[in-house]
Structures are given as C-alpha cells and as structure tokens.
Amino acid sequence: MLELQNISYRVSTPEGEVDILKNISITIPDHRLVVFTGPNGGGKTTLAKVIMGLVQPTGGKILYNGEDITGLSITERARRGISYGFQQPPRFKGITVNDLLLLAAGEKKLTKDRCCQYLTKVGLCANDYLDREVDVSLSGGEVKRIEIATILARGSELMIFDEPEAGIDLWSFARLTETFEQIHKEDEATMIIISHQERIIRLADEIVVIANGEIAHRGDCEQIFPLILADTLGGCPVIERKEAATV
Ligand SMILES: Nc1ncnc2c1ncn2[C@@H]1O[C@H](COP(=O)(O)OP(=O)(O)O)[C@@H](O)[C@H]1O
Ligand SMILES: [Mg+2]
Image (cartoon, rainbow, N blue to C red; front, side, top):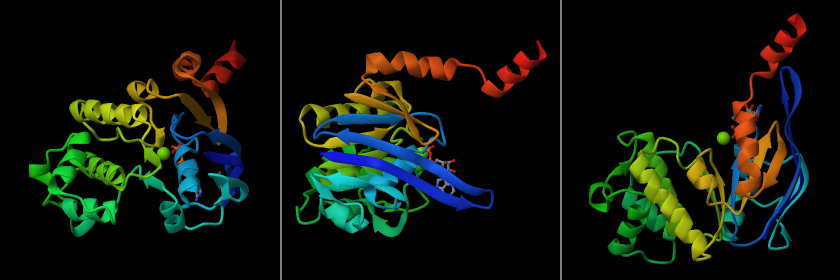
C-alpha cells in the first residue's frame, strides 16, 4: 500500500516562492489501477517523481507498505519494488534494446522468447528491435514503448507510467491498453498511470484529477468523467471575467 500524507513541494523562483504541490494526501491499496489526470502543469509528473524519489518533497511523508520511504534514494525505492517510466525517457547510446531488457530483469535471466513477449506487449516486433541501440535513431514513441517494456521486464510491485500514450500510434496504443488491462486483471502490480486518454481512464479503479498542485476531484469513472468533460469544455476564465465586466 502506498500512502502519501500531506505532500507539498515548494520551489523558489525569481518571482518568489511557488507551491507546485499543495498538501496532497492519497492512499493507494495494492493492485489498484489509479489514473492521475488533469491539465498540463497541474503537478502530475512532479507527484510521480516524488513517489519515485526523483524529487524530494518540502513537506509531508510517503509510506510504502507501512515503511516511511520519504528519505530513501531512487535505488532504495527501486529495491522495494517501485519503478517509474519517464514522460520523456532518456536514450542510451551504445546499449541495445536487448541489453536494457536484461538489465531491467536483473537476476531473473530472460530468454529471447521472454524479451519478445515484453516487446509484443508494447506493440513492437522483437525481430526489428532487439539489436537496435536505444539512441537518437529511434523515435520518441519507440523509446517510450521500449522503456515501458523494461518496466514490465523488471516486474515491479508498483509501476508508475507517465503519459504512456505520448507519441504512440493507435495500433500500438490499443496493444498497450490491453497490456495494462491484463496486468490489472491478473493482480500482478499496483499501477499509477498519468494519462489523458479516455481508454486508459476507463480502466481505472480510481481517477485522481490534479490541478494547480491539488486534488481537484477523485472517484470512479462514472463520477469523474462528467466532471472532466465539464472542466475541459468550459470557457477561458480570464476571457469570461473580461466579458462579464464589459456587459
Ligand atoms: N523545480 C521546479 N522549479 C520551478 N517550477 C517547477 C519545478 N518543477 C515543476 N515546476 C512547475 O510545476 C508545474 C507542474 O509541473 P508538472 O508536474 O510537470 O505538471 P504536469 O505533469 O501535471 O503537466 C509546472 O508549471 C512546472 O513548470
Ligand atoms: Mg507531466
């Protein structure tokens, strides 16, 4: 179980102090699929990085399976079973897709067949990719899918995916959605997926809408979908205020 207790993240900018995350508390029981969604700049990636240990919160606590992990490094969190897929994954010149999958799997020696299976789950054909270097010759969507395959190969207990849909064609996206659905059905892991895609949002046990560094709404799809539509179809508050003032 993951518990975020009053998580805040405040940074100093030339314009003064800015609160990126404001007192966020959520508990995520094991084997849930939770989607974080909400407008760009709302704080979703920062919150995911706080869970992984890439960003140190300025307030609050993170408990994982009852243990306070707030002060632990990324490596220590990874050892405890947490993994994170970047919104924009890094590339590794000189390292092949096969190397990355083997590294991710660690002690569990992967056969070529297993590597193929992980790549198929993200909509890539192993024959075309296993020996390719993870360098600039791959597109953003390809690197993204390879990173997701490495997270699957690692087999963590808690997997965090940051906008897995980014740069991915519809066919591969359908494959990826099926993969998330299957992991969830088979209770293989807890998943936090940051996404704007209706198909992923519909898979979630719980949807958390994050806006302005706060939880704006949370609930299941039926409760949250109408609210998301209302929020996104609303007008621009600045223009509306101006119009109201001139009437
Ligand atoms: N270290 C930082 N310094 C200043 N601003 C930051 C820092 N980290 C994040 N931000 C800002 O915080 C806001 C939330 O960012 P982010 O978590 O990436 O949002 P989201 O993933 O929801 O689009 C953005 O406006 C971003 O520019
Ligand atoms: Mg983001």
